[in-house]
Structure formats: C-alpha cells, structure tokens
Length: 84
Image (cartoon, rainbow, N blue to C red; front, side):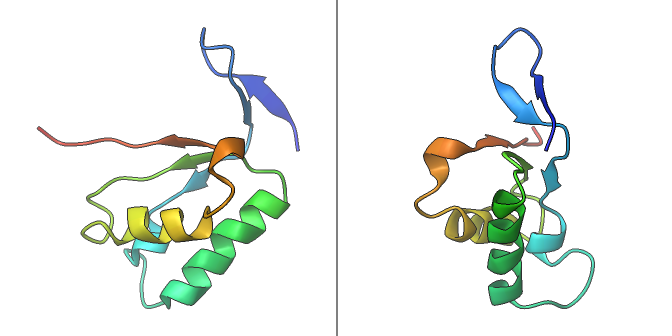
C-alpha cells in the first residue's frame, strides 16, 4: 500500500481509502457481518483511512465501522461529515 501525507497534518494515510456507504447498506442488501469483515480485510490490506457519515444507512455505517475497527482504532484515521 502506498501512503501520502494528509494536507499539513503530518498524518500518513493510505492512497486508497475505504468509503462507508456500502457498510451502511446504501448500495443494496448485505449483512452486518459482511460489512465488518470488509472493514477488517481493508485493514489487513493496508488501508488506514476510512470515510463515513451518519447519513449512510441512518448511522449503520458508523456502527459497522466501529465494530470492524474494534481493537484497531489506534492504527487508522476516520473522516466523517455532518449536515447542518
């Protein structure tokens, strides 16, 4: 996996990020177990940058991301957004 510096933060993030729409079930039916497995596989492949939103599946994306990253939080970066 290749990494880049995120702006002026000094954080080194994977060039490939993991978008959270799918783990919020917005692209079609899937199970929470499949979502959690996908997150863990992404980490295994070197992805350390995850993007989510409370709008993805009414919060399910954030819940599945949290479950998938259990015990790994110190090794990844999470971006999220809100709508005002």
